[in-house]
Length: 441
Image (spheres, helix red, strand yellow):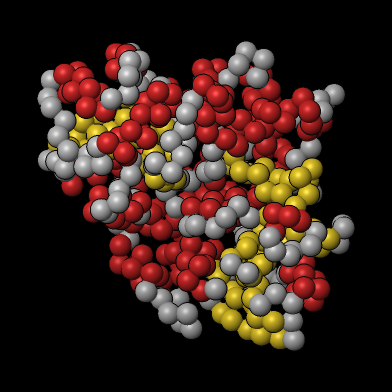
Protein backbone atom coordinates (compact mmCIF):
# COMPACT_ATOMS: atom_id res chain seq x y z
CA UNK A 1 0.00 0.00 0.00
CA UNK A 2 1.14 3.52 -0.73
CA UNK A 3 1.00 5.75 2.31
CA UNK A 4 1.34 9.49 1.84
CA UNK A 5 3.47 9.82 4.98
CA UNK A 6 6.28 8.10 3.06
CA UNK A 7 7.20 11.44 1.46
CA UNK A 8 7.50 13.05 4.90
CA UNK A 9 9.81 10.25 6.06
CA UNK A 10 11.93 10.70 2.95
CA UNK A 11 12.30 14.43 3.67
CA UNK A 12 13.29 13.56 7.23
CA UNK A 13 15.96 11.13 6.02
CA UNK A 14 17.59 13.79 3.84
CA UNK A 15 17.35 16.63 6.38
CA UNK A 16 20.64 17.92 7.80
CA UNK A 17 19.07 18.94 11.14
CA UNK A 18 17.23 15.67 11.54
CA UNK A 19 15.89 14.64 14.95
CA UNK A 20 14.65 11.21 16.05
CA UNK A 21 11.10 10.58 14.84
CA UNK A 22 8.23 9.37 17.00
CA UNK A 23 5.42 8.02 14.84
CA UNK A 24 2.19 8.07 16.81
CA UNK A 25 -1.14 6.51 15.86
CA UNK A 26 -3.80 4.04 16.88
CA UNK A 27 -3.00 0.36 16.95
CA UNK A 28 -3.09 -1.39 13.55
CA UNK A 29 -3.14 1.79 11.46
CA UNK A 30 0.10 0.80 9.69
CA UNK A 31 2.91 2.39 11.72
CA UNK A 32 5.14 -0.69 11.91
CA UNK A 33 4.58 -1.56 8.26
CA UNK A 34 5.44 1.90 6.93
CA UNK A 35 8.63 2.16 9.02
CA UNK A 36 9.83 -1.29 7.94
CA UNK A 37 8.87 -0.65 4.32
CA UNK A 38 10.64 2.72 4.39
CA UNK A 39 13.74 1.18 5.94
CA UNK A 40 13.94 -1.68 3.48
CA UNK A 41 13.56 0.70 0.51
CA UNK A 42 15.84 3.52 1.65
CA UNK A 43 18.55 1.95 3.87
CA UNK A 44 21.08 -0.84 3.64
CA UNK A 45 19.96 -2.26 6.98
CA UNK A 46 16.92 -2.11 9.28
CA UNK A 47 17.33 -2.78 13.01
CA UNK A 48 13.84 -3.48 14.35
CA UNK A 49 13.05 -3.89 18.05
CA UNK A 50 9.64 -4.27 19.71
CA UNK A 51 9.30 -3.60 23.44
CA UNK A 52 6.03 -5.53 23.59
CA UNK A 53 7.56 -8.81 22.47
CA UNK A 54 11.15 -8.69 23.77
CA UNK A 55 11.60 -8.32 27.52
CA UNK A 56 15.38 -7.98 27.11
CA UNK A 57 15.03 -4.55 25.51
CA UNK A 58 14.05 -2.67 28.65
CA UNK A 59 17.19 -3.92 30.36
CA UNK A 60 19.28 -2.17 27.69
CA UNK A 61 17.78 1.14 28.84
CA UNK A 62 17.85 0.38 32.60
CA UNK A 63 21.41 1.60 33.02
CA UNK A 64 22.88 4.89 31.90
CA UNK A 65 21.60 6.46 28.69
CA UNK A 66 24.95 6.59 26.94
CA UNK A 67 23.91 6.21 23.32
CA UNK A 68 27.14 4.50 22.24
CA UNK A 69 26.58 1.79 24.85
CA UNK A 70 22.89 1.45 23.90
CA UNK A 71 23.71 1.04 20.21
CA UNK A 72 26.40 -1.51 21.02
CA UNK A 73 24.03 -3.52 23.27
CA UNK A 74 21.22 -3.45 20.71
CA UNK A 75 23.69 -4.66 18.09
CA UNK A 76 24.65 -7.58 20.32
CA UNK A 77 20.97 -8.47 20.80
CA UNK A 78 20.45 -8.73 17.04
CA UNK A 79 23.95 -10.13 16.39
CA UNK A 80 24.66 -7.37 13.90
CA UNK A 81 26.18 -3.92 14.38
CA UNK A 82 24.05 -0.79 14.03
CA UNK A 83 25.81 1.74 11.84
CA UNK A 84 24.95 5.43 11.54
CA UNK A 85 23.99 6.62 8.03
CA UNK A 86 23.31 3.11 6.70
CA UNK A 87 21.01 1.60 9.39
CA UNK A 88 17.45 2.62 10.21
CA UNK A 89 16.80 1.90 13.90
CA UNK A 90 13.12 1.25 14.77
CA UNK A 91 11.96 1.13 18.40
CA UNK A 92 8.37 -0.14 18.29
CA UNK A 93 5.80 0.19 21.10
CA UNK A 94 8.19 2.59 22.80
CA UNK A 95 5.50 3.72 25.26
CA UNK A 96 6.23 0.54 27.22
CA UNK A 97 9.72 1.78 28.12
CA UNK A 98 9.81 5.37 29.47
CA UNK A 99 13.61 5.45 29.59
CA UNK A 100 13.78 4.58 25.90
CA UNK A 101 11.61 7.65 25.24
CA UNK A 102 13.95 9.76 27.36
CA UNK A 103 16.99 8.34 25.53
CA UNK A 104 15.84 9.97 22.28
CA UNK A 105 17.05 13.29 23.67
CA UNK A 106 20.58 11.93 23.90
CA UNK A 107 20.41 10.31 20.48
CA UNK A 108 19.47 13.73 19.10
CA UNK A 109 22.32 15.49 20.91
CA UNK A 110 25.10 12.90 20.75
CA UNK A 111 24.45 10.71 17.73
CA UNK A 112 22.69 12.83 15.08
CA UNK A 113 24.10 10.70 12.26
CA UNK A 114 21.93 7.74 13.27
CA UNK A 115 18.49 7.52 11.68
CA UNK A 116 16.30 6.52 14.62
CA UNK A 117 12.53 6.13 14.61
CA UNK A 118 10.08 5.09 17.30
CA UNK A 119 6.44 4.08 17.14
CA UNK A 120 3.79 4.05 19.83
CA UNK A 121 0.13 3.08 19.84
CA UNK A 122 -0.86 4.46 23.23
CA UNK A 123 1.84 7.06 23.65
CA UNK A 124 -0.54 9.82 24.75
CA UNK A 125 -1.99 7.57 27.45
CA UNK A 126 1.42 6.36 28.58
CA UNK A 127 2.90 9.85 28.90
CA UNK A 128 -0.15 11.08 30.82
CA UNK A 129 -0.04 8.11 33.22
CA UNK A 130 3.70 8.26 33.83
CA UNK A 131 3.67 11.96 34.59
CA UNK A 132 6.79 12.86 36.53
CA UNK A 133 8.22 9.38 36.01
CA UNK A 134 9.11 10.19 32.42
CA UNK A 135 11.29 12.93 31.02
CA UNK A 136 9.82 13.53 27.59
CA UNK A 137 12.42 14.83 25.09
CA UNK A 138 10.62 18.09 24.26
CA UNK A 139 12.24 19.82 21.29
CA UNK A 140 14.55 16.85 20.66
CA UNK A 141 12.19 14.70 18.59
CA UNK A 142 10.01 15.14 15.53
CA UNK A 143 6.46 14.00 16.21
CA UNK A 144 4.58 12.52 13.26
CA UNK A 145 0.98 11.43 13.37
CA UNK A 146 -0.27 8.47 11.38
CA UNK A 147 -3.92 7.72 10.73
CA UNK A 148 -5.89 4.93 9.08
CA UNK A 149 -5.81 5.18 5.29
CA UNK A 150 -7.46 8.40 4.14
CA UNK A 151 -9.72 8.37 1.10
CA UNK A 152 -6.93 9.30 -1.37
CA UNK A 153 -4.79 6.50 0.10
CA UNK A 154 -7.78 4.18 -0.35
CA UNK A 155 -7.86 5.13 -4.05
CA UNK A 156 -4.15 4.34 -4.32
CA UNK A 157 -4.69 1.00 -2.59
CA UNK A 158 -7.33 0.23 -5.24
CA UNK A 159 -4.71 0.89 -7.96
CA UNK A 160 -6.55 4.06 -8.94
CA UNK A 161 -3.33 6.03 -9.32
CA UNK A 162 -4.46 7.81 -12.48
CA UNK A 163 -7.73 8.85 -10.86
CA UNK A 164 -5.86 10.04 -7.77
CA UNK A 165 -3.50 12.03 -9.99
CA UNK A 166 -6.43 13.54 -11.87
CA UNK A 167 -8.02 14.74 -8.60
CA UNK A 168 -4.67 16.01 -7.29
CA UNK A 169 -4.10 18.12 -10.42
CA UNK A 170 -7.65 19.45 -10.68
CA UNK A 171 -7.69 23.24 -11.05
CA UNK A 172 -9.90 25.33 -8.77
CA UNK A 173 -12.35 26.32 -11.51
CA UNK A 174 -12.63 22.84 -13.04
CA UNK A 175 -15.51 20.43 -12.51
CA UNK A 176 -14.87 16.73 -12.11
CA UNK A 177 -15.70 14.99 -15.36
CA UNK A 178 -19.01 13.10 -15.25
CA UNK A 179 -17.08 10.18 -16.76
CA UNK A 180 -15.40 9.70 -13.34
CA UNK A 181 -18.02 10.76 -10.76
CA UNK A 182 -19.79 7.39 -10.69
CA UNK A 183 -16.52 5.58 -10.03
CA UNK A 184 -15.62 8.04 -7.28
CA UNK A 185 -19.03 7.76 -5.61
CA UNK A 186 -18.74 3.98 -5.60
CA UNK A 187 -15.23 4.15 -4.08
CA UNK A 188 -16.50 6.62 -1.46
CA UNK A 189 -19.31 4.28 -0.43
CA UNK A 190 -16.88 1.36 -0.32
CA UNK A 191 -14.74 3.44 2.04
CA UNK A 192 -17.73 4.03 4.34
CA UNK A 193 -17.98 0.25 4.59
CA UNK A 194 -14.31 -0.58 5.10
CA UNK A 195 -12.85 2.55 6.67
CA UNK A 196 -9.10 2.89 6.48
CA UNK A 197 -7.61 0.17 8.65
CA UNK A 198 -4.96 -1.41 6.37
CA UNK A 199 -5.83 -5.06 7.01
CA UNK A 200 -9.50 -4.35 6.33
CA UNK A 201 -8.77 -2.43 3.13
CA UNK A 202 -6.40 -5.14 1.90
CA UNK A 203 -9.00 -7.85 2.51
CA UNK A 204 -11.69 -5.89 0.69
CA UNK A 205 -9.53 -5.12 -2.33
CA UNK A 206 -8.26 -8.68 -2.66
CA UNK A 207 -11.51 -10.55 -2.02
CA UNK A 208 -14.50 -8.19 -1.94
CA UNK A 209 -15.87 -10.39 0.84
CA UNK A 210 -17.89 -8.33 3.30
CA UNK A 211 -18.00 -11.20 5.83
CA UNK A 212 -14.19 -11.27 5.92
CA UNK A 213 -14.09 -7.47 6.21
CA UNK A 214 -16.48 -7.41 9.15
CA UNK A 215 -14.64 -10.27 10.85
CA UNK A 216 -11.40 -8.26 10.73
CA UNK A 217 -13.17 -5.11 11.94
CA UNK A 218 -14.65 -7.04 14.87
CA UNK A 219 -11.22 -8.41 15.73
CA UNK A 220 -9.72 -4.91 15.73
CA UNK A 221 -12.51 -3.64 17.99
CA UNK A 222 -11.89 -6.61 20.29
CA UNK A 223 -8.15 -5.85 20.36
CA UNK A 224 -8.88 -2.28 21.42
CA UNK A 225 -10.98 -3.56 24.31
CA UNK A 226 -8.12 -5.88 25.28
CA UNK A 227 -5.93 -2.77 25.44
CA UNK A 228 -8.39 -1.32 27.96
CA UNK A 229 -7.67 -4.31 30.20
CA UNK A 230 -3.93 -4.19 29.59
CA UNK A 231 -3.22 -0.48 29.94
CA UNK A 232 -6.03 0.99 32.07
CA UNK A 233 -6.40 0.68 35.82
CA UNK A 234 -8.81 -1.84 37.32
CA UNK A 235 -11.24 0.91 38.28
CA UNK A 236 -11.03 2.64 34.90
CA UNK A 237 -11.57 -0.41 32.68
CA UNK A 238 -15.36 -0.77 33.14
CA UNK A 239 -15.85 2.95 32.53
CA UNK A 240 -13.85 2.81 29.30
CA UNK A 241 -15.98 -0.08 28.10
CA UNK A 242 -19.20 1.74 28.97
CA UNK A 243 -18.19 4.90 27.10
CA UNK A 244 -16.80 2.99 24.11
CA UNK A 245 -19.98 0.98 23.66
CA UNK A 246 -22.22 4.03 24.15
CA UNK A 247 -20.77 6.17 21.33
CA UNK A 248 -22.86 4.85 18.40
CA UNK A 249 -26.11 5.35 20.34
CA UNK A 250 -25.06 8.85 21.41
CA UNK A 251 -24.41 9.80 17.78
CA UNK A 252 -27.78 8.38 16.75
CA UNK A 253 -29.66 10.80 19.02
CA UNK A 254 -31.31 13.81 17.41
CA UNK A 255 -28.91 16.37 18.89
CA UNK A 256 -25.87 14.00 19.07
CA UNK A 257 -24.61 15.71 22.23
CA UNK A 258 -22.57 13.33 24.36
CA UNK A 259 -24.45 13.00 27.64
CA UNK A 260 -22.64 11.22 30.46
CA UNK A 261 -25.84 10.11 32.21
CA UNK A 262 -26.84 8.25 29.03
CA UNK A 263 -23.71 6.10 29.31
CA UNK A 264 -25.10 4.58 32.47
CA UNK A 265 -27.99 5.74 34.60
CA UNK A 266 -26.76 7.73 37.57
CA UNK A 267 -23.31 8.42 36.11
CA UNK A 268 -22.14 12.04 36.08
CA UNK A 269 -19.47 13.90 34.16
CA UNK A 270 -17.00 13.76 37.04
CA UNK A 271 -17.37 9.95 37.15
CA UNK A 272 -16.44 9.48 33.49
CA UNK A 273 -14.36 12.47 32.34
CA UNK A 274 -10.99 10.83 33.00
CA UNK A 275 -12.01 7.69 31.12
CA UNK A 276 -13.26 9.73 28.18
CA UNK A 277 -9.93 11.56 28.09
CA UNK A 278 -8.13 8.19 28.11
CA UNK A 279 -9.90 7.23 24.87
CA UNK A 280 -9.10 10.62 23.34
CA UNK A 281 -5.43 10.37 24.36
CA UNK A 282 -5.33 6.87 22.87
CA UNK A 283 -6.46 8.37 19.55
CA UNK A 284 -9.49 6.07 19.35
CA UNK A 285 -12.06 8.85 19.39
CA UNK A 286 -12.32 12.54 18.50
CA UNK A 287 -14.05 15.15 20.62
CA UNK A 288 -15.82 17.92 18.68
CA UNK A 289 -16.86 20.82 20.90
CA UNK A 290 -19.60 23.39 20.39
CA UNK A 291 -19.09 27.08 19.76
CA UNK A 292 -21.83 29.70 19.64
CA UNK A 293 -19.69 32.57 18.37
CA UNK A 294 -17.25 31.72 15.56
CA UNK A 295 -14.48 34.21 16.29
CA UNK A 296 -10.72 33.72 16.50
CA UNK A 297 -9.13 32.01 18.23
CA UNK A 298 -11.97 29.51 17.99
CA UNK A 299 -10.81 27.61 21.09
CA UNK A 300 -11.59 30.64 23.24
CA UNK A 301 -15.28 30.42 22.39
CA UNK A 302 -15.76 26.69 22.92
CA UNK A 303 -18.35 25.34 25.34
CA UNK A 304 -16.39 22.63 27.15
CA UNK A 305 -19.58 21.01 28.48
CA UNK A 306 -21.26 20.47 25.10
CA UNK A 307 -19.56 18.17 22.61
CA UNK A 308 -19.94 15.20 20.26
CA UNK A 309 -17.76 12.11 20.07
CA UNK A 310 -16.76 10.42 16.82
CA UNK A 311 -14.62 7.40 15.95
CA UNK A 312 -11.13 7.69 14.47
CA UNK A 313 -12.18 5.29 11.69
CA UNK A 314 -15.54 5.41 9.92
CA UNK A 315 -15.47 1.70 9.06
CA UNK A 316 -15.13 0.76 12.72
CA UNK A 317 -18.02 3.08 13.58
CA UNK A 318 -20.17 1.37 10.95
CA UNK A 319 -19.25 -2.06 12.32
CA UNK A 320 -19.73 -0.97 15.93
CA UNK A 321 -23.15 0.42 15.00
CA UNK A 322 -24.10 -2.86 13.28
CA UNK A 323 -25.09 -0.88 10.18
CA UNK A 324 -25.29 -3.44 7.33
CA UNK A 325 -22.78 -2.88 4.56
CA UNK A 326 -25.28 -3.28 1.74
CA UNK A 327 -27.45 -0.53 3.23
CA UNK A 328 -24.63 2.01 2.70
CA UNK A 329 -25.61 1.96 -0.98
CA UNK A 330 -29.31 2.41 -0.16
CA UNK A 331 -30.52 6.01 -0.63
CA UNK A 332 -33.95 5.58 0.97
CA UNK A 333 -35.10 7.79 3.80
CA UNK A 334 -35.09 4.81 6.18
CA UNK A 335 -31.28 4.84 6.26
CA UNK A 336 -30.72 8.60 5.96
CA UNK A 337 -29.88 9.20 9.63
CA UNK A 338 -27.16 6.55 9.84
CA UNK A 339 -25.70 7.49 6.48
CA UNK A 340 -25.58 11.05 7.74
CA UNK A 341 -23.64 9.99 10.84
CA UNK A 342 -21.15 7.98 8.78
CA UNK A 343 -20.73 10.92 6.40
CA UNK A 344 -20.04 13.34 9.25
CA UNK A 345 -17.48 10.94 10.71
CA UNK A 346 -15.87 10.51 7.29
CA UNK A 347 -15.50 14.27 6.76
CA UNK A 348 -14.06 14.75 10.25
CA UNK A 349 -11.37 12.09 9.78
CA UNK A 350 -10.48 13.48 6.34
CA UNK A 351 -10.11 17.01 7.73
CA UNK A 352 -7.88 15.82 10.58
CA UNK A 353 -5.77 13.51 8.40
CA UNK A 354 -5.15 16.36 5.98
CA UNK A 355 -3.82 18.87 8.44
CA UNK A 356 -6.74 20.80 9.87
CA UNK A 357 -6.68 21.50 13.57
CA UNK A 358 -9.45 20.00 15.65
CA UNK A 359 -12.78 21.23 14.24
CA UNK A 360 -15.71 22.46 16.31
CA UNK A 361 -19.39 22.67 15.44
CA UNK A 362 -21.69 25.68 15.63
CA UNK A 363 -25.10 25.62 17.23
CA UNK A 364 -27.43 28.54 17.69
CA UNK A 365 -30.03 27.68 20.29
CA UNK A 366 -32.28 24.98 18.88
CA UNK A 367 -32.64 26.67 15.52
CA UNK A 368 -29.55 26.02 13.42
CA UNK A 369 -26.43 23.85 13.48
CA UNK A 370 -23.38 23.70 11.19
CA UNK A 371 -21.48 20.43 11.30
CA UNK A 372 -17.92 21.76 11.48
CA UNK A 373 -16.14 25.04 12.09
CA UNK A 374 -12.47 25.14 11.13
CA UNK A 375 -9.95 27.90 11.65
CA UNK A 376 -7.43 28.42 8.85
CA UNK A 377 -5.17 31.37 9.61
CA UNK A 378 -7.44 34.29 10.43
CA UNK A 379 -10.42 32.74 8.63
CA UNK A 380 -13.17 30.86 10.45
CA UNK A 381 -14.80 28.57 7.91
CA UNK A 382 -18.12 26.75 8.28
CA UNK A 383 -18.39 23.27 6.75
CA UNK A 384 -21.84 21.82 6.15
CA UNK A 385 -21.98 18.06 5.52
CA UNK A 386 -24.66 16.40 3.41
CA UNK A 387 -24.76 12.71 2.54
CA UNK A 388 -26.53 13.00 -0.81
CA UNK A 389 -26.94 15.27 -3.83
CA UNK A 390 -29.03 18.39 -4.40
CA UNK A 391 -29.44 19.20 -0.72
CA UNK A 392 -30.27 22.57 0.79
CA UNK A 393 -28.56 23.96 3.88
CA UNK A 394 -30.85 26.15 5.93
CA UNK A 395 -28.46 26.13 8.87
CA UNK A 396 -25.53 27.17 6.68
CA UNK A 397 -27.63 30.00 5.23
CA UNK A 398 -28.52 31.14 8.74
CA UNK A 399 -24.84 31.10 9.71
CA UNK A 400 -23.82 33.05 6.61
CA UNK A 401 -26.49 35.69 7.19
CA UNK A 402 -25.31 36.17 10.74
CA UNK A 403 -21.51 36.08 10.38
CA UNK A 404 -20.73 36.71 6.68
CA UNK A 405 -17.72 34.33 6.37
CA UNK A 406 -15.33 34.90 3.47
CA UNK A 407 -16.16 31.42 2.24
CA UNK A 408 -18.52 28.67 3.38
CA UNK A 409 -18.12 25.00 2.45
CA UNK A 410 -20.91 22.61 1.58
CA UNK A 411 -19.69 19.06 1.00
CA UNK A 412 -22.00 16.48 -0.54
CA UNK A 413 -22.14 14.27 -3.63
CA UNK A 414 -22.61 17.36 -5.81
CA UNK A 415 -19.81 18.35 -8.19
CA UNK A 416 -17.42 21.23 -7.54
CA UNK A 417 -19.05 24.64 -7.86
CA UNK A 418 -18.65 28.16 -6.54
CA UNK A 419 -21.38 30.73 -6.20
CA UNK A 420 -21.72 34.04 -4.43
CA UNK A 421 -24.54 36.15 -3.05
CA UNK A 422 -24.91 39.03 -0.61
CA UNK A 423 -23.69 36.80 2.24
CA UNK A 424 -20.40 35.79 0.62
CA UNK A 425 -19.09 32.78 -1.31
CA UNK A 426 -20.16 29.13 -1.07
CA UNK A 427 -17.77 26.42 -2.26
CA UNK A 428 -19.39 23.10 -3.14
CA UNK A 429 -16.95 20.25 -2.54
CA UNK A 430 -17.65 16.60 -3.33
CA UNK A 431 -17.23 14.36 -0.31
CA UNK A 432 -14.59 12.37 -2.16
CA UNK A 433 -12.54 15.55 -2.71
CA UNK A 434 -12.76 17.06 0.78
CA UNK A 435 -9.16 15.92 1.34
CA UNK A 436 -8.07 18.73 -1.01
CA UNK A 437 -9.95 21.46 0.86
CA UNK A 438 -6.79 23.30 1.95
CA UNK A 439 -5.87 23.87 -1.69
CA UNK A 440 -9.24 25.50 -2.40
CA UNK A 441 -9.51 27.98 0.45
